[in-house]
Length: 293
Image (cartoon, rainbow, N blue to C red; front, side, top):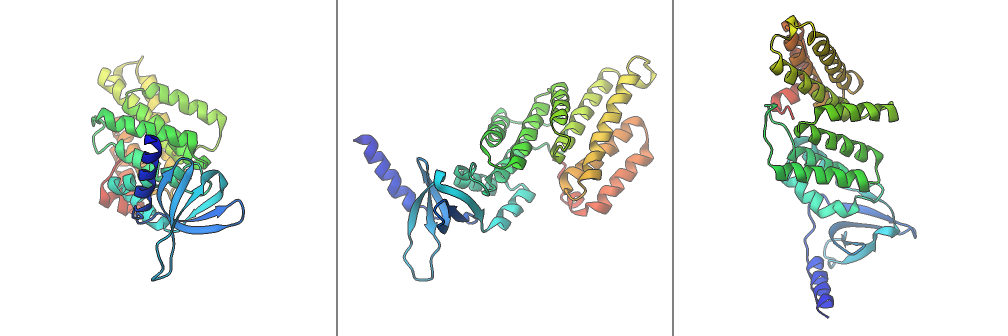
């Protein structure tokens, strides 16, 4: 009886929720029905939506079964595109909390919001030695794992898998990340840009660790070959994001900045300055925002 009462209370509470801006979807059902409405809650295996209404009409909400949804189409995606690009954590959290129940539905695109939120929670700001609260890293890792498991979209799952690798970099497991990326490359020749970005970062961090252990590596005939190979691999991976995916501003610009740092480790200030100049030329907005995440 108590459980039934609680369900009734939940039903009333859900029905009174106000829709969040950006949650308007077109729901295409298996029986051919199309319902346009804002996601305002979930109940068991159903989504509650507030139907779009004409001016003056009464507010109506209905429950739709997830298993009966053929596909859904976001009708206000530009709101989330802006939040994803800016990394606005508060907006992304609200969007994810409101719509993550659509993750497994074709077309929902909710995984992109979750991936952006996880990235924001684990973003490195300026210093490679940035410390992250364990809770933030764990939340990011859990988000990526859920999206990789549940998302209907292969691209969302690939980005989430790459995000899990980035978390492992932050945990100091760079060598493991390099091995996993190499295994991934054997599975699929067409890796998402995020993977090249992560591979470049992992290899560079390995090279920086080697420099700390052997500051005179250039004079060490045993260390120099390993260091040279690491820097070459890091440079190739970093340039890959820019060469193959120049329209993906953030990873491409990060790749160029990483390449500048690699050249500086090599003592080649001219090429380092050229890479920085390319970022200013090709990605002025990235430079202006100064967000090397």
